[in-house]
Image (cartoon, rainbow, N blue to C red):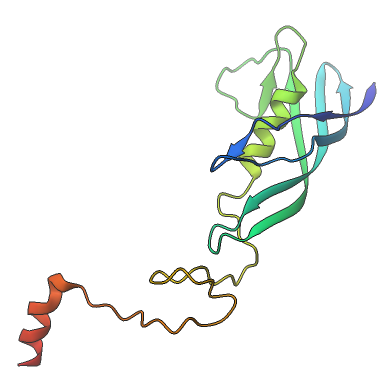
Length: 152
């Protein structure tokens, strides 16, 4: 037996650095298939993320399409198996599962582009717009005496 499903979950309460990460509801669609009491749950999640680049602080609106698959069982013979989701009551909260799946799969570092140069550590200029002209060769004052010894 199989059952197709679709729906939306609201993740508007999820924030990152004080701003909402998900501007619109997450769209879910998938299928649950029962084979001899073992349910295979596969679904996809489509959503957009609104955040800022972790390097240059530019606004980012990025769409994502993620696919997930789980095996759901009523009980396990061995208690130490993490490959299965155990639902002794026969009910699974798909919104809770999808929320944790999505949050675990989101990248920890979100950048506007792979070669983003970020901000100048001296003046704060966006280095993607061009070189700011700051000299980044700043000597550590704790090593000044060592430099004098090496020059002699």
